[in-house]
Image (tube, rainbow, N blue to C red; front, side, top):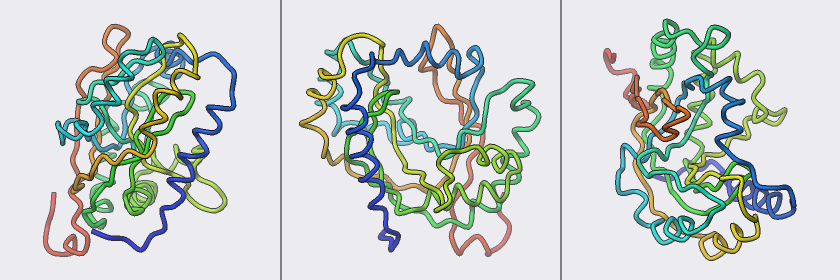
Length: 249
């Protein structure tokens, strides 16, 4: 599937992230120590996402030489392939001041009629870059996930509220770029070792996967089990023009 949407900004973002990371001399972040604070004490996040590792268990095979090399570093913790996912919208955390579990079904009910308007698309996987949180695999969706974010913002009041404070929502539009985290930082070692290990893989081509649904899930992250199985709680099928044809639940 081809698209006439210009997604060159994705590659530009990868290059910018790399340069920003390389220019810093700050100690590496301990990702999960930082997560404890970000998650308000290990609260469970709710996200609209693509659970690539669950849907396509073999998708990471082209990355295996890189993942093996990263596994030798004290600086990083390689994410299990089954947990690798692409976040479209982080809605919030399950807690009284965030999201009540009783609200979650309404997110699906409000989102589904709008998400169905999006056509199925291919997600091209390739390019490696890095931020202060960790290492990611780039992706090119032809702009479809920005459209999904737009539809979610229009259809789900909670998403509309959350995206008011989303730094990716700029005066020039949505600056979202799809990425899949493949490793987090441990807080140990040197960023120079990370960059040296990644350099040969920066332009890696990891193939593509077809996307026919947007999903909503809980990420049951706990202090003793950071990478517990993603709990998919809703699936919204992409129909494109076919969404007008009859009833769909």
